[in-house]
Structure formats: structure tokens, C-alpha cells
Amino acid sequence: MARPQAAGFTASPLQLQLINCCIIMLSLLIQSAETINCSEPTSDALLTALKKNIFDKTEIRPVINLRTPTNISLAFTLYGILDVDEKAQKLKTYLWLNLLWDIEGLSWDPVECGTDTISIPRKQLWRPDIVINEFIDENKVPDTYYLYIKNTGKVMDDFPMHVISSCNLDIYTFPFDIQNCSFTFNSYQHTILDVQLSIARPVVKSLEYSLGVMKTKGEWELVEMLAQKHAIPPQEMNISRDRLTYYIVLRRRATLYVVNLLIPSCFLITVDLFSFLLPPQNVDRSSFKMTLILGYTVFLLLMNDLLPVTGNTLPLINAFFSLCLALMVASLLETILIINIQCGSSDYGPLPRWAKVLFLNYLAKLVFLSKKPSDQNWDPEEHRTETKRCDPVVDTPQSEAVHNTTPTHQELRKISHELLSIRQQIDKHFKTDESADEWVHLGQVIDRLLFGMYIVFLSVSFITMFVIWQYWYNKQASLI
Image (cartoon, rainbow, N blue to C red; front, side, top):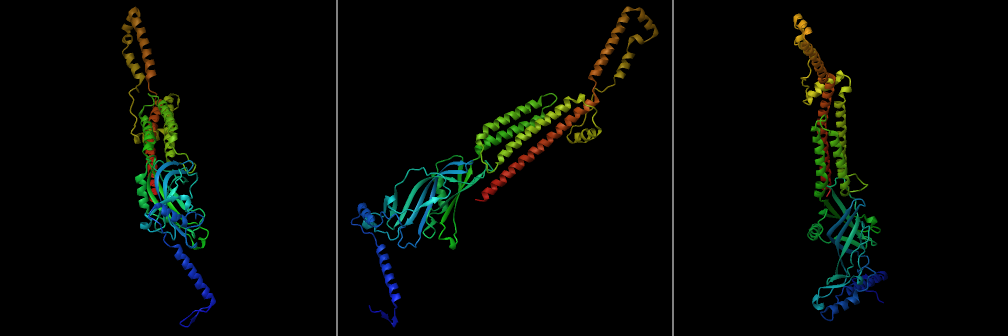
């Protein structure tokens, strides 16, 4: 075989072999990229031509050169949010997955073959092994058997999926919580050198389609959808899979929980607050508060099914309920203390001087409960003296002599002494003991003081709780 010469250039044997290999590969490429010819413009003719070229070639990727990666365009539409299980940290959704890829070298003339699109059984073609990493259960949906092929060689595969995926649910701000769950798509076996993923349509369009077709109007609503393509270092391309992550942002509809949990709790704690206006010396305030605590406990037991159960974090609403119950118990203990002071004051000794100065002078003025003078504090000796002056049996010696000799006056004198004794006993009974009065006044001052402290603590606690709720809600919303 003579060596080719051109313009003084002489090719070596190695160069000749490379030229021959290039010519053979070019001829194969040209042959593989030839357009499919149909004998007539019918579906049967196109199907017969496709059987000869691409059918039953499911073992290898549809590329001419195996070094060429297959690009899979991916999109999905969220049809329904079925359930969110906080205890098991699971999200159940129903979506429709769309996959697009090209069969290299495949094309036909739509005029010659009669159509530009044809549906064929899915099992007749190579299909990418795209999975969702967060998938933790079986895909229980009916099988779909067909996909579409365009005349340009593009394959369109659409199929439903019942996705039960793991999701890190944060219920700290329940019922005003926002959850961010992810779907990570990647090939199960092929590395990034063989299969690469891309976004088929803008995420905004996917969100609009999902909101338009979503049939479920339950506890959760879809508020946002984001997508992220993960970058892979060059040194890891031969072992890493190409990944595409969609973030599904869900928001809980809190109206049910506000009406059934928060508002009744606020009503009960308000009733407990105004129960301080009941006078403890005339009304059994402790029985009322005990009944209120019992009713609140029954309310929590009945509403327990509405509360999320998880071992990850304690919801803030549980702390809210615990605070309400603790305040009710504290008000009951305060009532027991006040009743003990006021009802047992007659058995106590004199009030200490420091308690008089602190409570009856300073704190009494602070709570607008200054001591009023009692009308019952009068001197019985004065009345006894006056009574003696008014006694007719001691007016003059003459009258005494007359009285001694008159049986009627003696009887009147005896009756007068008996009436005076009765009057003294009544005065002794109704005489206000100054020590007992001071203890009663001390109980009133302490009751009014603790009532004010209860209002302040209740207001500060509720405001702090709602500020924390608002802060974490805004923090979750800012992460979207």
C-alpha cells in the first residue's frame, strides 16, 4: 500500500491507522443518525420502522458514544398533600412526575410517517432509574404503560407517584408552623458521567400548576416551591450521582387550633383572673377555683388528640397550657392562704410590728386599701357609768328607802340589773378585737397585692409567649 503524499507531507503508519479509525467512526455516526423511513404515512408503518431501530434496546443508554451523558429534564406537579405525621416525621403527597430525554440518532419525517408523536409501551425503551432519596415506603399507585416519542427523538414519560417521604418536621411554633420538606432526585446507579439532571420548567410554573390542580384543602397549604442543583467536585464525578432537590414549603392552617385550643384557654384563665373579685370571707372562692382547675384538666384531656406528638422538640403551645394550669394552681394556693389568715385570725397572737408597718401602712396604701376606723370600738365602762346614772334606784336616800319598802320597785331594780348584765355580755360579744381586725386587714392587703402581681405576671407571660411565637414564625418564613 502506497503512502499518501500531499504538499511534501508524508504520513506515518500510525497516522494512517488513526485516519482510518476516524473514517469508520464517522461513517457509523452518519449511518446511526439517518432518518427513519416509513413505507406509508401510517402508525403501523412508523411502528414497524421503530421496531427495527430502537425497540428492545433497554440494556444500554440511547447514545451513540457511551462517553456522552444522557440529560434528563425533570419536573413534577403536586396534586395533593395527603398527610403530615409529626410523630413519625413523614410527609405523604401525591405528585405527577415528568421526565424528558433524547434518543440520539432517532428522527423521522412527520409528513412521510403521518405523525410527529407516537405512544409506545414503556417496557420497550430504556428508561432512567430516577428515584427520590427521601422515599421510605412503597409507591402504591396504578401502573402506567405508555410514553410518547417525538419525531426529533425526544421521549416524554409522565407517571403518578404516591410519595411517602421522610421530613424533618419542626413543630415548636405549632399551630403557626411552616414546614420545609425536600424531594432529592437522582439516578440510583448511574453516575454524573452517565446521567445528568436538569430542571424541565421554571419552578414558578410548577408552583402555579400545583396550586391550580390541587384537590386537597385540608390542614396544610402549599406556599412555596424551590429547586436547587447540587454542584459536584470534579474528583468525585466518577462515583457521585447528579442530584436535583426540590423544596416543598407547607404552612399549617391554624384557624382550627386557635378556635379549639387557644381561645378556650384564654377564656378559662380570664375567669380565674376575675375570681379574685369574689370576697373570700363570704364566698367559698377555693371551691370555685378547684372546679375551674378540674374543668381545665378535662379540656386538656379532650383536646389532647389535636396536639402533635413528637420526641424532637416540645411545642410552644404545650408550655402555654402548662403556664395556664400553673397560674390556676397558684391562684388556688393564694386563696387558701388568704382564707386561712382571715378565718383563723381569732386564734392568732398580736400582729408583729414589722408586719404592721410593712403591710398595713405602706403596702396597704400601694394597693389602695387603707384601714378604716371601726364603729364598734367603744368603751363599755362609759356606757356602764351612764347606765348607773340612769338607774332610778340610786337617785336619793329617800327613794332608796321607798324602794326598800315597795315590792314593785324592788322588782324593777332586779330587772334593771339583769338588763345591764345582758347588755355587757352583748357588748363583750360584739366588741371588735383589735388583733383579729389587724389580721383580717392583713389578709385583705395580701389578697389585693397578689391579685395585682397575678395580673402583671399573666400579662408579661402571655406577651412573651406571643412574641416568641411571632419571632420563630418570622424566622421560619425568612428561611423560605
